[in-house]
Image (cartoon, rainbow over all chains, first blue to last red; front, side, top):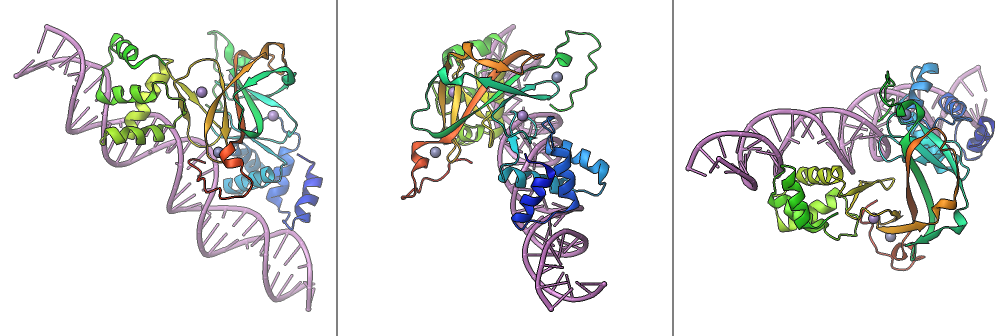
Length: 149
Length: 149
DNA sequence: TGTTTGTTCGCACGAGTTGCAGATTGGTAG
DNA sequence: CTACCAATCTGCAACTCGTGCGAACAAACA
Ligand SMILES: [Mn+2]
Ligand SMILES: [Mn+2]
Ligand SMILES: [Zn+2]
Ligand SMILES: [Zn+2]
């Protein structure tokens, strides 16, 4: 995703308006590596702008995704995550707490892939499922509540 | 997934009952490489057993998945698909019509993966997104209706 | 045939997301 | 600065996919 300033210019260039809601979301997403859900972002936004609507957050996220500024990451269960990092990368998710982190995979060229015949414009999306350090602790006071599930 | 006969034995061994509904679903899933959704399977089942409930289909699919006889495949959008093929494999999906096919990936050992540090018991799940031959046709009478979306 | 569970089914509910429409406001022209 | 219009925001209904619940039902077994 580009900087809030660049996004502002890009939105204006398309005849789209710059609203306080959009500016706030641009700022909250700028450099955000948390892979927040729409709901999570909504809560953050509501802290600074109490009247903002969840609907507006969804709307803006969809707009940004349509413009290619944001990637929507489906993690298998629970809500979609949104990712301002549009570089070629993949993800690990902790199936207990829902934490998502970036994973960079290289050397995929010398991979033998069988079964893609007949499909065009294929792009892979890899999600590693596992447990993060916090959640993987055997038994002790693991009062780490699942933030999402 | 094991054969309907073997599943029948396995269910009995666990004190579970063998109902006509379960037998029908065992049969419809046996060797099925279509990656059907619960709904799709329900329609097939309803052809042979008009009174069967969608709830029962979900229930049975979950039971089989819990027993490790079935894999539940999340394809990013739309309903989960169910897969009696429990071998180590991945999937391509046509983003237009929803067709899912098996993909076998080998040589993943000499892959450089960065970012998994701190995560345990990680297993990758790869979904290739693209367009199947039927849907990729440029313009002509592509009256191929999206079966799912 | 009767008893005991596990199962089925219909329906209500829940999560996540989108459609809709009236109220609101940014951008701009006068 | 004011007026206007189109884009936007917001709240709510609706929608999709899936699950919880409880009454009716039926396998398994004595
Ligand atoms: Mn990412
Ligand atoms: Mn498969
Ligand atoms: Zn965790
Ligand atoms: Zn297709």
